[in-house]
Amino acid sequence: MDLIHIHTDDNVAVSKAPLPAGTLVNWSGSMLPLVTDVPAMHKVCVRAIRSGEAVIKYGQVIGFAREDIAPGSHVHEHNMEAGNHRPEHDFCKDYTPTELVAPDQRATFDGYLRPNGKVGTRNYLAVVSTVNCSVTVSRAVAAHFQNSGKLRDFPNIDGIVALGHDSGCGMSTAGDGYQTLLRTLHGYICHPNFAGVLLIGLGCEAMQITSMMRETGLQESDAFQVMTIQQLGGTRAAIEAGIERLSAMLPAANACERQPIPASELTLAVQCGGSDAYSGITANAGLGAAADILVRQGGTVIYSETPEIYGAEHLLTRRAASPEVAQKLVDRIHWWENYTRMNGVELNNNPSPGNKAGGLTTIAEKSLGAQAKGGTTALQDVYLYAEQVRKKGLVFMDSPGFDPVSVTGQVASGANVVCFTTGRGSAFGGKPVPSIKLASNSMLFERMREDMDVDCGGILDKRYTVQECGERIFQYILSIASGEQSASEKLNYGDNEFAPWHIGAVV
Image (cartoon, rainbow, N blue to C red; front, side, top):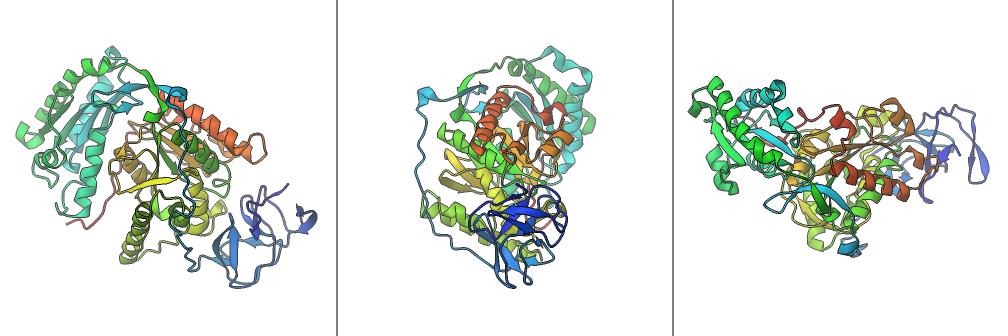
C-alpha cells in the first residue's frame, strides 16, 4: 500500500514513496488517482476538504484548508495553515493508574550505586564552570588528562568532561535566568554519572560559588571541590591546582564498579529532533512503547520540549494523575504563549525547514507525532526546567524545543539515559549521559549507519509491530545503561552539547 492512513477519522494519509501525478493508489477498496505530485512522507487528501475546513490527522485537527482540496491532492503549506484551533483539555478524563511489574520480576541493568542512593549509568569526572570566564581553565584541566594518557591507569573511569557555557554573569541574581542556571549546574554537580566534580569560577561573577553552595546545600568533600581563578592567582595557577585536585579524585572514581540494579532506577529522557512525518508513526511510537515498559518496571520517563506539545497538550492533561498536575502543564503553555508573544515569535509556527521537507506542516501536526514518544501511561507531575524529578512514572519537564538545551535540562533533572528519535538525521550526544539514536525510517538508518542505534523503519513495512519495536528499544536501553557504547559515544559526541537555557535579559 502506498499510503498510510493513521486514524479512521483522518481526511489525509501519508505517502510511503514519491508519487507522481496520475498514479493510481489503492484507497479504501478502490483506486484513487493522484491529481498532483506527492513527495514521500507528505500528506495526500483522501476525502474532499472545503476551504476553511479542518485537516484531520491522528484523529485530531492539525490545521485548516486555505482553499478547496480535492481527493488525490498534495496537502502542505500551499493549501493549508495552522489556524487558531485550541482543543479542550478535559483534565484527567482518560486517567488510568499504572499497573507495575512485581519487584521480584523486574528487569535489571549493571549500574553504579552511589553513596547517596542514586544510580549512574556511566562513571565520569567533571570540571564545571560557574561562568563563561572560567571555561578556558576548565577545558585546559580536562584536556590535560585526555592528552597526557593518565587515564589509561584508571580503566573504570569513562572520561573527564568539561562543562562550559556562555552565561553565569551579566544577569540579575533574583530572576528566572539565574534560578534556571542554578538548577542546571546543581543538577549536573549532583548527577550520579559523575564520581567526582571540580567546580571552577572566576571569582567576581553573578553565579558566586559561595551563594550556590548556600542556596543548594552543597558542601565540599573528597568528591566535590571548588576553586576560583582570582583567588588562586590567575590562569596558569588555576589550571595546575585543578589538575592536582582532579588527580586526587582518580583512585576513588576508578574503584567504582558496576552491580545489578533494578530497571526502576532508570530515568529516561525522551527527545526528538529533525523529525519527519514518519517519526510519529514509527520511532516516536516505538519509543513510547518502550517508555510504557519502563514505567511499568517502576522507572521514570522525562518528556519535554513544551513548544512541541503545543496543540497536543490536551492528550496529556486528559491522562494527568490529578487536576493540579494538569493545571501545571496548562500554566506552562500559557507561560510560553506570553514568552513568545513578548519576543515577537509565533508559538504555533515551530516546524523547521527540515521538518517541512519531511512532510510536517503545522506545530499541531508535529506535536501530535511527537507526543507518541511519551507513551500512554498517566502523567504524574510537571517540573520546571532542570528541576529535580521526584515522582516515578511519566513526568513532563518544561523546556524549549531546541534539542541540546532540552536534553541539558532533562539530564540536570536526573535523566541517566537519553533516547533521541530523528527522521532527518540529527547528530547529537551528550556527556555524561549516553544518548540512543532511533531512526524513523530505514533509508536514514542505512545512510547514517554510524550515527544511528535502532532502525524503527520496519514498522512501516510491517517487519515488526510498534510493540515489538518498543521491546527492542527497551532491551537496548538496558544494554547501553549497562555500559555498551551508543553510536554517539563511539563518535565521541558530548563535549559541546552542554547548553543551559537562557531566560531574561543579558545586562
